[in-house]
Image (tube, rainbow, N blue to C red; front, side, top):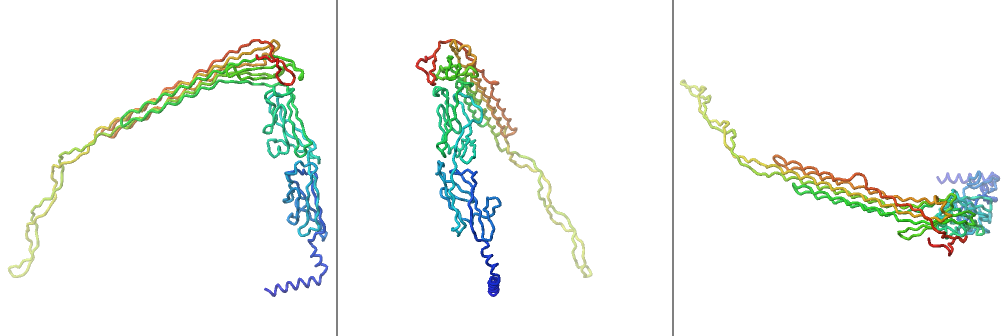
Length: 530
């Protein structure tokens, strides 16, 4: 083996000596001559994000190699050393450090060279991108009224001409590149929400402000001028009555006893009446919007809670609802107790004298013939047959009197009947709808149809189900066996539900003017308490 290796080495040396030109070409077959570093300027280079780079290498043998990722590239990145200042590198991608925010006017440095060939290093200062403009725009229709939620997307225009649309602003990573704040509203969970209280909105205008954190010089303002064309809803209802408790189950009967009846279900509570509501409406001309608006003041007469609305009669409405609470459901009746099993019949032993035929041994004498040898008259021995009386035992059937023990059992006890199920509770009546009083000034009266009042009673509670009857007890063992008890009857229950509550009254009336608007969306000192 050593001799073979020696011969191969000698052959290689000889070949190198004989063919010096070819050997020299082989030695420089994969040596680098120069390299060039590339990056695509259309890629966005932003803090916290990655972009691709590429290297083109010229070898001394005239070949050109491109790294994986470039068109026609097959050269692996492990053959190069990449040093990044302001970021990190992995598999052909440079990731920009998030701390380089804002990114306007900032660069990162990328230095690349073939491994063990630092003399060929190439270094680039690569500028980071930043927004030159941003625009918030809604993606669906919305009412221009207090409390409206506006879902939108953010369009960002970058210095390299690229455009990016952020359509999920709930995403914490996307929204982290921008700052949102508002006047006359607020930003919440990726949506712009107009302030629900119009008294906190100045000059009927809500503004959303967006600032780029990559370029703080770039902002956008999305403004909504309210028109109050909205279908408002003011709804109250009385509390629902509590449901009745189910009745307790009856106890099971003891041996041979009937099960107890189930207890009745509790009746459901009545629903509470809806609150009375008072509503006042005044019409005024708004000089900012150049239209008439209805100012509406409403009060829950039960709690004193106040509500205020501005309504554009041209398309806006207000629904006022006072509904009674639903009645509570009746409780189910308790189950009847199971009947107890009957006791088994009494057991005892009776002794009796009975005649029985048995076989008994009897000794009797019988004559049997036997052969014997005797000496005859002539002195010779001869065999003769003689009668012999013998005793033998035989078995004969005889009738005898014997004493026997017979197990006896009395009749089994009847099983107890199951208890009746308890009756179901009655559902509670629905509460009455509250009275709604509507007062209009003379100039608001023509628009009274813009406020729709509805008073309705609550639904009556469902009646409870009767309890299930108890199972019958089994008859006790005996002669004869006891009869099983009867199953208990199911408890009675009313069909359906209790009556619904009645409706309250809708009352219309007039009132004096009470509202004056000072064009800065605050109530003036001249506002009167209706």
